[in-house]
Each structure stands twice: as C-alpha cells, then as structure tokens.
Length: 432
Image (tube, helix red, strand yellow):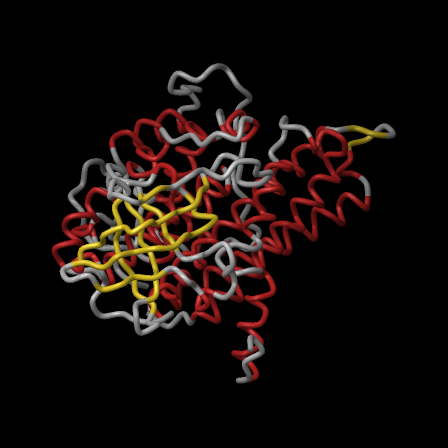
C-alpha cells in the first residue's frame, strides 16, 4: 500500500484534517448536536455497515479520513441537502468546506494542493461524500479528478504552481469540458476547435452537461487543433468570449450546478495548452481517475439507502409485527447487504491495484458500471420497503434514486462500460 505523504500536522489526526473538521468531528463524537447554525432537523443516524469486516483491510489513516468526512457530512450536508435538492439549488458554500476536509485531489501531492494520501483514502472520501449526496461528491470529484489531476499531469510547472494550490484550497473552482451537445459517448467526434493565431489559439465551440461550469473560475477544455488532434488547455472564465449558461429543469443531481461552456473566439495563450499530450489519451486518463471515485461513491449511496431501509423496517409495524420480521423484507435486506459487500470488496481490490499503479481503465470501467447499477437497484428496493413514505423527502431514497439515474450514464454510460469490458475480454472492438 502506498505510503501517505507527510503534511504539516495541525491536529493529532493528521494534516489533511483541518481545525474546522476536527471541531465537527468532536461535536459528532460527543453527540453534542451542534449544527453550525442550522435550524433543528432530524438527526443523521447513519453509522456504517461492514458485513465482511472490511475495516480490517483499511489503515488508520484511511479510517480517520473516512470518519472525519462522515462526520462532516452529518454536520454540514445532511441537515440541508433535502432543502437544496427540493429547490434545485447548489449549496455553493460547501465548496470551501470540501477543501477543508481534503476532498479536492486527496491522492495528489501536497505541494500541488492535494492531500498526499493514497488511492484508497481517495475512495473512502468519495464514498462518504456520496452517502450524503451524489451532487456533493460530483462537486469534489470534478475539482480533484477532472481539473486538478490533468493540470498536475499535463500542464507546465508554471501553471501547476499558479492554479493547483488555489484549486486545492477552494479559492478557485474548476470544471471539465469534454462532452458536446452532439458528441456524448463519442468524444473523438468533437467539433470544438482551436486555430493557431501567433502567440495564442482561437477557441470556438460548445460543451454540454458540465458540472460546476456556471460558478467555475476556469475550465480544462479539450478541442481539436488544425491537424485534427485533440488538445487540452486551461481556459479562464473571465476571458472574452467565454460563457457558461446554467442548465435548468433537471430531475436528477438537483443539488449540483450544471451548465454549458460556450466559446466564441476565445483567445487562449499557447502557454495554457498542455504541451505533451495529444489525442484521447489525455481526457480518458482523467475520466479513469473520476470513474474510480464514482465506483467508491456509489457504494456510499447504496449504504445510505440500505441503512434507511433497515432502520425503517425495524420500526414500522404491520399485521402486529415489524416489517423486518417478514420473509420478503428479509430477502430484500439480505440481498442488499450481499450486493453492497461484493461492491466493497471490488473497490478495495481496485484501490489496492491503483496504489500499485496496476489498475487498468477496463478494471475501473467494470467497477463503475457494477457499483452504480447495484446502488440504483438497492435504491429501488429500499423505496419499496419504505412504502409510500419512500417517495417523500422525509427519507433520502428518492433523492438517491434520481441522482443515480444520472450517475449511471455520466463518465461513460452503463452500456459503454459494458462494451469496454467486452473489448477487454475478447480483444474485439464493438464500438465501430
């Protein structure tokens, strides 16, 4: 297992847990009920479920990071998320809090704004965030995996130093521009282009379904040059010709802000174009990083649905006994925890391979596809256990279910990931 990078310690738990988070952690541990100024709401009673004693496979650093983020979610996300989701509003004030708990680039080096942790720590953080809400995890994973990661891997040293510390601290927010209105699962068909203009490139085109774009300070954008090669670049939102209109009317990821990216003769300095990567290799490496986090995150959503269903079935009585006492209910719950346990083992092994630099894009695709589909099925079963109450915002089930419908298709659709696995095991390309 890769060793954590050292970071100047603020508290005994490690440098990546800030003083702010320690206070939240202490409040939760002492059960003081402090809610950072929030109105009185129902308590988040989630404790976690570990049927195969997976915690024994995690280091103390992993467990501390997970528990700290879990407590932050209980204090800062759970009390407000239903309200924000109902209003289709993004809790943008949480961007700073996500930075303070080390959720932006947890496995990137400390000197570049990351957390200096390993890939399993990154995974358990994403799991806890999505246990709160898929949109909150999206805010973090886009910032870390799709913005900070490509800048760290492909940008010049000057740009790394300019942008990464500000992104890691939440001073700047980023987004990732790959998907286009007419080119979703086929990014190679993109029509966004750059044209050489002396000391700069002129960028024209549009991107669609871009998380964080309406509030982003910069975008990592992928476009074709005059030779038809895909190039990556950093584009600041304040540059002339750049706009990011928000997309409205979503029934899913309602607490996440989504928009377009529109480029009309945007002048991009050549220094802002990644010098040494051309083709789909660049954006696909970023997607692998993000998909890995999603594979862990989906487990968190499933755990929250299972946790709610298990508790409800023990409390709700019908025909003179708790729902949990009926065979059909026990069948549902037993199958839920079985599938969750299999998914937990899958991502733990994937994380171990990632720490060794051996996780392949195809392995990541398998985990993303399996775990998101698993979580969606568990949300649907949990909704049935809750009966009519399952469609209300008294419980998190429908919010998770709607969110997971999007997670099933973004960062590669359910079917595309199936074909990736198919190509990997047969050696034959079914995409074209």
